[in-house]
Length: 297
Image (tube, rainbow, N blue to C red):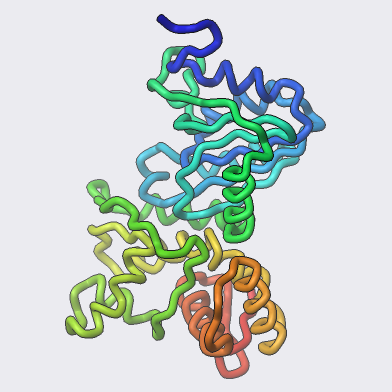
């Protein structure tokens, strides 16, 4: 028997009940589509401060389960979108209450207009320690989305072959993952099977952390895909906050950002040099100058 107000195929009803008078709302979900978020935005109070944290993996965008065009809808409402490439939590958090569970912000996940997938959203206090920790990690290691990010992911999704396959994303040992192997040009060669096993063993953890799908046939498509992922998460945040600074200031800011997440850095200058090489190689709107240690973008 379904209890009134708790239909597991219409979780959207509980969400609207939570948010109808919200002055603050944070939405965390890996999959958000235009048809999924429109009903929420249409009933959300206009004065509500909206924060959305999601992911835009090109293969998932190509499959239709995630849509970067929600960036425009959230922006029109006055909200912000932040990106984390391995976020999997689903949470809807107001200033005092929250719903957490399995439902993504899709028509099928929330059951808009028709019974959707069988999902669950359970109420919790907004100050529950687990939610506070979740938001601390996500806000510290996500990158605020821009129009350039939206466009780059859509382009990367359009270049994927029809039958691209991707193994499940391997959890990195830290949510604040940063690349460590240099030079970045070697990644494609390992992916394409063009390097010896000793080098491949060093590079495979980077490919696994990025979740690069099999089936990318050209180096251009590979670079486009990896660039779309690097724009998200901690690397994307570092790129934005450490670019257009002197090398010394950039290294100091990198240390500060890592320190915020409890990420010890043995050699900050070396890490920064690795990051500038990766960012300039995979993100075409950034350039390295002055010996390759200053990033402009």
